[in-house]
Amino acid sequence: MKIVVIGGTGLIGSKVVEKLKQKGHEVIAAAPNTGVNTITGEGLADALAGAQVVVDVANSPSFEDQAAMDFFQTAGKNLTAAEEAAGIKHHVALSVVGTERLQDSGYFRAKLVQEKLIESSPIPYTLVHATQFFEFVRSIPGFSTEGGTVRLPPVLFQPMAADDVASAVAEAALAEPVNGMIEIAGPDTFTLDEPVRKVLEYDHDTRKVIADPQAPYFGVKVTEKALVPGPNPRLGSTKFDWWLTHVPPPQKR
Image (cartoon, rainbow, N blue to C red; front, side, top):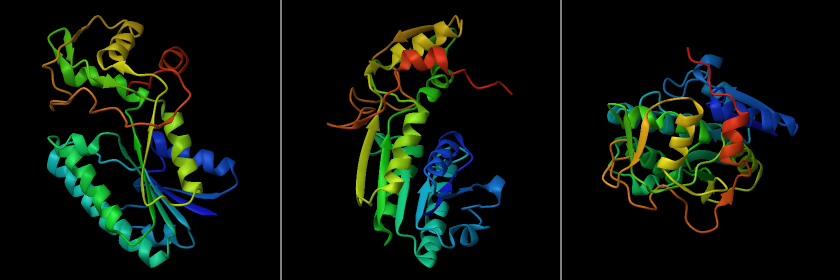
């Protein structure tokens, strides 16, 4: 089967591509650096020709409100039109657990618009809602530091390994469309401050992490269960403590 992975050279996309190739499928890693651009439409029709499934794991290059909205609206409309023309049978998209609960954020408003475009499209679809990636935890202090202190709301947090996210997305791509949403999450639940504190300690970062119920999460007030899935999510197998000591941090550029 031919499968096109939009965002196929990124953190999740490259893993999805590899997992699908290992199962014997013809997989196209579609991204601007491989000549496929969902914003301009460049290379899109050629990439989708003869494909049965499209997996979209691309993310906006900017988290700024209007830039994110422009990205997801434009890419979503271009992708839908190209999929209709190519006769795509299944569209799989990666989104975020709690998107509908984080609408004070312009980025998550844009993600919800992306989801609505997918739901209203004639293409059968599966939305995969994932919790935050372990790999994302290191970036959280950068948005939450005041002086030498990181202030985070002690809300529930159930992050998962990028490799487990990719496995779930690949599995969804090979299954029948659910025309709805599935939720995936890590095997353990923390409060948000706990894994951030562990990462900083492991990295010998001297910043102190404070659990502050009034602190925002990326500028947004969040409720206790805003970031965690509902009942019976599909759980990844990788434990956070194992990941922290076995997966090297990304190289600083």
